[in-house]
Image (cartoon, rainbow, N blue to C red):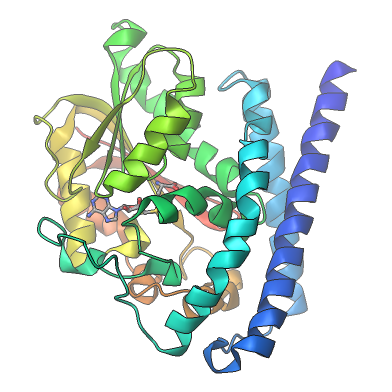
Length: 351
Ligand SMILES: C[S@@+](CC[C@H](N)C(=O)[O-])C[C@H]1O[C@@H](n2cnc3c(N)ncnc32)[C@H](O)[C@@H]1O
């Protein structure tokens, strides 16, 4: 009985988030058409069949999210975990930030970054306003809005999609079953504000967690969220995922969520290669990113609209890329992939 009620509460919460996300996008799109029509993106209408496919995929995502919690892979409380008060307080900021986003879009200005930025140490491809975001990834302001913006973009499914890395990660770590849980090191590459680490911490309370990102501002935000959790504080390190400041063979697990589509092809391969290098033989890499044309042709319009609405300069190349081949080229074996709504999750082992 308690389980049924909790499941109903979870489904109601997800439906509520979905309604808020859809309503927010409807109203903000209408407002942009009115106030800044020249910046309004030309999107393609979503075919009715695709809407039905999206609804079915969303329902399947909720079901697997619930089932894997029931199986004990992570606590059920994680399904309800979100900084509600903080998001409510920040929501007006999302609206206040919109006019500058529309301006950048109208002017096709994708390099509107903080004027005091020292660009040394950042690859060129990074110095852009991804998603037309104010300051790109390079300010505390951007970091303070990011989680809420992603939550709205994915209609509340971002964490359920991120949580799909947990099962393959736990399965992969079984290769080290003879070690105590506290001896396992798991690295989250491009951790951003640490939402994936938050999911992983709930599933692996004793593991040593490390998060890497290029953005000091996003790492500061990650530190704020993660330091509220019990258990050992994850180590947060600023660095480029192509050449990570970690010893070869020093990690037993690596996760990387929503990075691949923001990289040019060569950098994508370089990141996968470096994930291979830092893993110990037997270790597991779990990658999660947008679905692609080959595995989810039914969502082609949604993928196309995504790159029309947001500044995502490498997305078109990414959705046609062969990630399995890249993993194999890096040396990985046991490559598997599954799709969950708009996210594809790959797992692969270092032989
Ligand atoms: C779309 S966000 C994803 C963040 C997080 N994984 C999540 O699930 O929300 C992309 C992140 O990748 C980081 N990033 C982009 N290129 C990078 C690179 N070459 N090395 C390290 N981090 C990078 C950005 O700073 C940003 O935090």
